[in-house]
Amino acid sequence: MNPRRQFLTSLGATTLSLSLRHVSLGQDQSETMKIALLSDTHLHAEPSHEYRSFRPYDNLVQASKEVLASDAQFALLCGDAARLEGKKEDYVQLKKLLEPILSKMKMEIALGNHDDRANFWTVFNNRPIDKTLSGKKHVSVADLGPQRWIVLDSLMYVDKTPGFLGQEQRDWLDKLLGSDLTRPVVLMVHHTLGQRDGDLLDTERLLAIANKHPIVKAIVFGHSHQWRIEQREKLWLINLPALGYNFADNQPIGWVKAELRSSELVLTLSAIGGNKTEHDKTQTFKWLT
Ligand SMILES: [Zn+2]
Image (cartoon, rainbow, N blue to C red; front, side, top):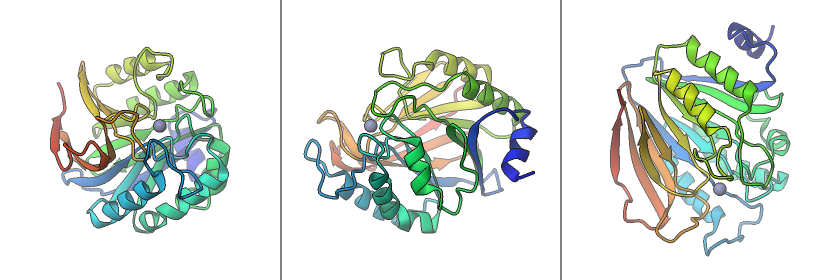
């Protein structure tokens, strides 16, 4: 039995067609783990491609340098990795630009509505950590010192705005959350949580699962290209800024440094463009009880 099958079986989920990776870093749960959070890179194969006067290529080069210069031990990209249609050549370029990061640390990439799962897998399945890619959804579990991060797959249609997890993935998550109560959980999903047509269409069902398991402390997402954090019942909802371009001048573009602790999440914005007034601002989010 291969490790993936073994892990799925241990969750009692042998019929799922999820592509699951399980990353484990830092055994000491009392220590702080530092990670880099990127979202909405919207990388086009052509480096000179611009949108709203932003160059996603240049932004990723800049952010990559900063991530490497930081003490991040792990990186996450919260979807919309590719410009619009998740073309293979976009991912080839993305992989090239991420190479310095990938050679230093592990990284997980969530898929958004401007990604194409098959193209993504074709280009990225040679990454050393990609040993179990198959199935219909791209999810991963990362045990990062004091916290567990679960990366979900909300890609429903390529290049159409809404997202959807679906019952199979929600059931899998529900079961997973009930099986390991040892460390606080942060969920990552590309789509915004809301009721609009372009949000995650099963938002309420995801929130019901998160609220059922008090071990879930925060949900991190992208999609809106807005840097915004709010509280909803006992959850922190963290909307990451886009790295590729913003949709409104009052929003930063950049990435977020995260310090993971057993009782809180500490976030520092690195704004590299757009509205930089919150650059280097650090905010601490203690778990809500
Ligand atoms: Zn986007």
